Image (cartoon, rainbow, N blue to C red):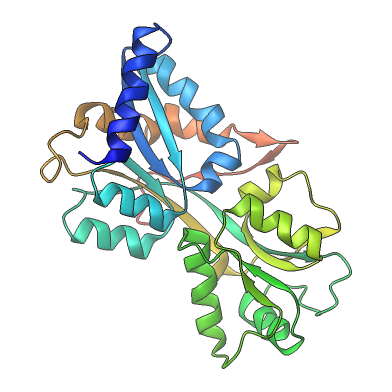
Length: 269
């Protein structure tokens, strides 16, 4: 058991001793987008009420979340990088991947759009940003959003991303803050964007490209590789979040009347 896991166990025992936690607790490694969008604050109390199980979320980039699960430092994994998720399953770290929900990515930038990227072509927009040496904030943190952004840059086939390209090595919220303060461009998941309050002069400029589709999946961390994993509790979470009750809870989460995530359990995504 690694240090991270031991610390979480200490916290769980301390809270249980104080009578503040539910009967059972599981650890979920997930993305900053699910946490910073406010989804889990809406979703997890409903799960706890239905099952008596409390979920401790460790919200990091998808790449870090998968690494955490590969070390056995989580019971369940909830992320959004299908290629990496399928490799995780193929490598034997999870018995199965379950689609849960989707939203989309958007390219955000200054409302005046000095680089002229506005439209529905994400690859064409990146080409214009590079040609204009426009300020662009990349997360650079191996998150699901970062992986998607890197795919789009690769599809653009550019020798250079322009002198304005900067990697922050940070989460979605800080990247949006940097874009707002520098009047720059940034790729964001729509959920975090809708919950983001410090927008300054930023606006959504590119959306609607089918390549911006953003699928989320959930996986049980393999109890074969890590016998200490709380497999029963984790499987209950997976069963609930993909059930009609869990899917309805996801669909009902809104900010200013706008739905952030769209349930699609049982699909092939």
